[in-house]
Amino acid sequence: MVSRKTGKILSRMGHEIRYVSLSPDKECPANNISFIKFPFKKLQFLVKNFPIDVVSFFQVFKAIKDFNPDVVHIQAKILFFPSAISASLLGIPYFFTVLDYYNLCPRNILLRKNGELCHYYHGAYCSDCVSQSDRAIVKIINLIFPFFLKKLFFILRKKIVDFFMYKAAKIITFSNTSQERLLAYGYRKDKVAVVYHYSFENIQPDANPAEPVKNNKILFVGAITYHKGLHILVEAMRDVVKGIPEAKLLIAGSGNGAYLNSIHNFISENNLSKNIEFLGHKSNKEVLELMNDVAMVIVPEQWYSEFGPVILIEAKLANKPVVASKIGSIPEYVRDGVDGVLSQHNLPGDFSEAILKVLRGKDMAVMMSQSLSARIEVVKDAKKTFSCLEELYGSAKRSNFGL
Image 1 (cartoon, rainbow, N blue to C red):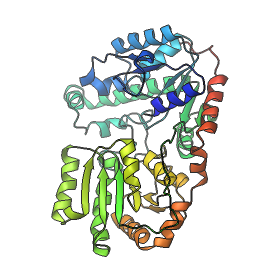
Image 2 (image 1 turned 120 degrees about the vertical axis):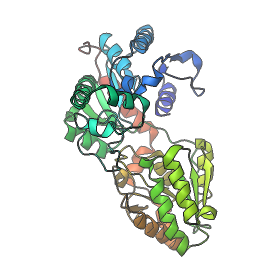
Image 3 (image 1 turned 30 degrees about the vertical axis):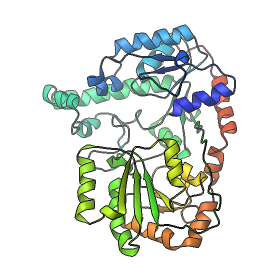
Image 4 (image 1 turned 90 degrees about the horizontal axis):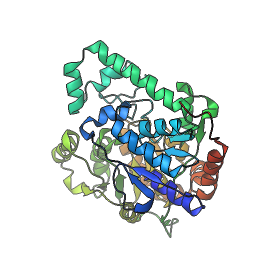
């Protein structure tokens, strides 16, 4: 989605854009997309973390060579190595946008399997965490390779990823917090730029933000996975309903497996079925429509979400109060008590208290609806943002980028 929106805006600014993608994208004209055949779906974990996909490499190399762009902007993980290697061999500067922590963590989220935040980054330590994965390929690796070889495996992964990250003309991130993390890891300051190249369109702000909220509906939007924190919110609802029996949580997102089952079990065991509704996956247009009919939006992230969660920014642009985790870059986008309420990310009690505070404090909710942080004011100015991206592209020279 980010690459599609980036391409659309740059096209409007007069640039010729070509996409390289693994799967068909109906949002982009077929005549400017090169679709890459991916024969190693079952080895996706290995392909993403090591440059072993020769088939995709030759396809990506041909696509880039034929188009001969001035720059290559990589916003993918599975095609990171084919794209970076191809651009390097062709002497074309490439940029990489950090949309999650793929470059620092094989699991992408700097979150350990036991739910603890990870402070080690990638390397030998990753073998302890990734070995617990239920992926079939990881189970096979566990059976075949002894412990010390798995450690070497991830040390090698670190060396390879770092090599191609350092060769990028610029590493682009969406927040100052993320930039600081990358600098602390060891990337040079002149290598990392903060540019939120995403366009927030079709958002209709609440026509009457000065009116108190008229219902007690709460909206959660996102994948139903541990790192998105729905379990924290569902547990918080148990206390919210005690205070406001008519409160209702709407969940727009999909998921499966043991995590989703545990959510349903908790709802059933605590008699919350009437207060929690699963809506399934919703398009962005549908989400924006839902947002108009709720009292607030909740963002209970459990990882270093340092990329400005899209739903959080959309909620603020739609004049909705938010309750969000005090983690990652979220405090850049929401000022506690001014345009939202921040809660300890892993404490359901903190969330329930914050939700009740907003639902009961109608005047406070109005104030939060009308106020935008300076960071969101910057993000919503797409013209200025994409002008910065143009400047970065223009500063890259087509030389000294070969292997």
